[in-house]
Length: 108
Image 1 (tube, rainbow, N blue to C red):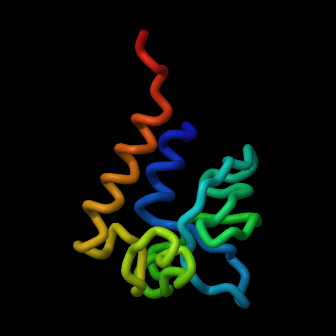
Image 2 (tube, rainbow, N blue to C red; image 1 turned 120 degrees about the vertical axis):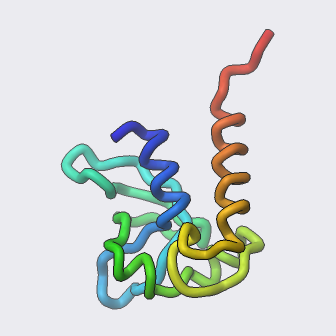
Image 3 (cartoon, rainbow, N blue to C red; image 1 turned 90 degrees about the vertical axis):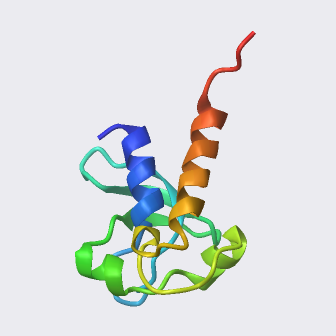
């Protein structure tokens, strides 16, 4: 999986720690661990730096989105990954467009 593909997947699904004491989804930037297909070290919008993983289907549908990540993004709090929320889909697309544009080399 390329870094761009991982970023896109993470924006749609968000991330979780896999720890039972932290059962929320986070918006994060993650650097892929070569030993993991969909996980690695990341920094969440709420300021945490830790190992993060793409959640499974049931977690993507049932876990709450981190209140602090949502507040930082200016997004509504709620349940489930952004891809499962019709209101959030355009917001994710806008974030991905901005990330792609900011990573393109400047034209001379």
